[in-house]
Length: 411
Image (cartoon, rainbow, N blue to C red; front, top):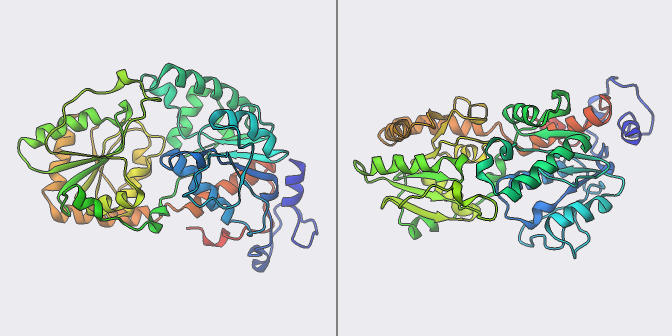
């Protein structure tokens, strides 16, 4: 990365500066500084998939990272030929359009990246790319193996065993995930950096309140749960808690999301009969999800395993009181802005829902806390964290002489 290092040690005028030297504030705000952008490309495989979960992180982080640099900076988003047409993809460059999915990522993408360092932000990247930084969100294929088909487990375990050696650096989304990656893959802490997610993408989404009438829902009259029937989401206990509550209350429980049977092992699914109080919303649009968050009495998320846990923050950002478990990354992400339950106790889950639903003043307290907490998770901050990691790890710790365009807007 000598070229990268030289670029980081040179002012806009081309005059080299010593590492660690100070610069005046005017130079620090110079928008023409290219930084490392000319040496990077972004893995845009996520552009051909549903924008949810890790794909949401990949999309928002990639576009926020691009915004750190001038519009004419050379920082392409390399996408397959079947990239979505309904999602804005800044600086997208379709390459090797006749390949799709993993074949495109493994065979075409390394050639398209050329001499650039590839940023792969959704768990996976080309196994034999010469220069690559990979964001691993979790190691659930090791921690919850029963939740995945044997083919999926085998592929990810083989891939992770290669990427842990071939990647220039590993990025993850929480201290919890960093510890699990260290434990499962044997990677030294110095090779893993944490870049937190943002949640302000919801600020740009207009609520679609039509879903309330379609599902016959009333404001502040239902409990919302977002997830799927995987073991880690703990919906079996949620549904058991709903059954016990249905005997005493007429609250509705709206479950949003679904289960991809191509990925999750059907044997891991909990068999159950739907309670009359459960409203199965299935997959919803971002606008519909925001409307559901904004009008719910509370959001229930007693997950057993999360690499980060974006849905509770989305709920907080929309002013929805949140109940979460103390498992995995959730206490780290939610802090003191959520009510906590015991994820392994059906009785405690039901008790916390009862407390929240029975006290309007308590709900208002959690709404206020949640909104304030969510404001600290912004994608521009995440992108700046990523840029700091890249400069520190790939430029040998050389101090940046000129700040990027968004550096002054950190929160």
